Length: 209
Image 1 (tube, helix red, strand yellow):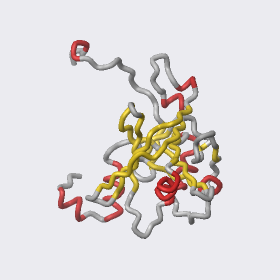
Image 2 (cartoon, helix red, strand yellow):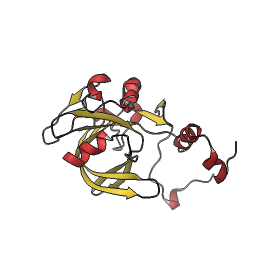
Image 3 (cartoon, helix red, strand yellow):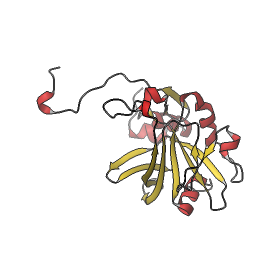
Image 4 (cartoon, one colour):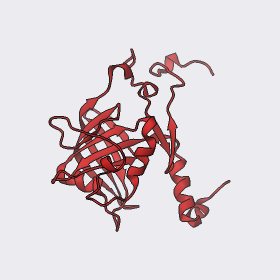
């Protein structure tokens, strides 16, 4: 299969959606936890979470245009400036996947999808108790992407929870120990297993290939 720009533009919407979402490969599967100012909780799965910098510790994720579809996650973040990002455990991918259903605002995905809200002092938004790696964030910026109406939500990490056994002797997070899941496209999930561990790359240390 080979598509040029015209082929991509003319493709069936669902076919194009699946292919373009999948061509970037396996992405992190994360549950973003929020609650509104009345305390109604919300949790939703996202595959667009990305590291933006370490000093300050910034994490971003992309939200699609609102249009006629309510974006409870975004609305809650804008209202409270607090949210959590939680790795999806491999054994709970089915629970996590169905948080993407369009539940009404008064229905908590935590309860409906069999997940447990967990609170940490100083963080308004709920964490996912079942997640091994958890981040608490404060909203720092909302960046509009005019070309398609999406928005990049930028938050600063103000809290981290990672078990000691998930961090190796070199200080790296081992996702295979954490049993974190990855996602490709819209609905295909993967176990993550380490296949290599290399030192910081320097020109003088580069081997011959």
